[in-house]
Image (tube, rainbow, N blue to C red):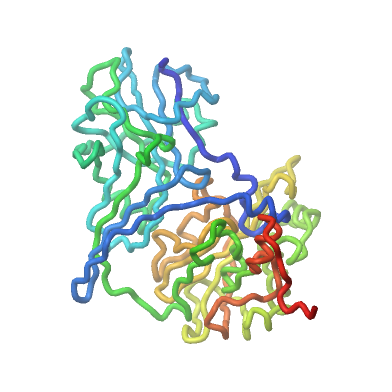
Length: 454
């Protein structure tokens, strides 16, 4: 194996997965399935608090994790697809340069920062014996290994922030590195999870890889993961009417039948997209190039208000009102807050175009304990990691698919929603919700129309 940049990136379907702009082809839409696995450990009751341990183990798909391996022996301008899909290395080159790796693992677990006792990054030893220590740190921004040269990858790392950490043996070929303070900072929202950088310690032998670990595409489920241990304290309440609701429910082979971000924010299961709101790309471009992204968000807000008014009976919504901010007063016995943001990835000569998918809108909804939740069309709904009561959603990165950085960057518009139904509603008929019709359209299963008079 020659020492060139060897890396993997799993972004291959990103242009098809938009939150607000629902894919128009039902078959294509439902063909894009993504499984995110979060294994929860046993909960042990301890009086007024609960001890818990969670693991964020991610499957191999575009929305989950990314690893990259680089060597200082690689050409400076290298940025191609010389992929090593199974391993990543840390060590020193024969010339004394670095072999280093980048690791991104999403925080798909449910905890508050002050409840965390310990967080560990688990690595599977793929070859030889592991080093006793690593230098580990964080990265300055989102990265795409397909586009990074070695120098650009190294520039993401603040050398002064690298910490020497002990590599602890675990069971069955695994080792772990403590990342407790890093994970706490991520869950407070004080820093964003862009992943870890791993280097060897300074005095290791040149020309040797001191650590060879399994990367994200390594077989046998040996990809890196984060394990967090802690104790759940007393959670606050009174920030809104509803707790977390998982959509769609478990039990289907293709769990993509329900909702996009807008529908989920309205506690409904029928996706609401481009055609429903009635905007055109000509109008989006006119507003964007005349007035900017924030005015596009205002425009989408006006269309949203109109759509909700026209469908308030189906939504079971008796009031939908704009509010000044994330902490504007509401009646939490009847109302809850939602937040709207847009992305306009355009510039002169490169307008917003439907086929390019460079425009999208996204919604978050606040839970009764002050955290925020959202849903992408082909994923289960989730609680936004790190969100907490009393903290503005603007402090957190609004991402598409958890891999693409701060995708939604406009100002945030807030609404208070009075939802009169406790259950998720179906505000209009849709094959996205009618499971039998979905199976007929996508799997060839016989379909008998409900309430057929014949």
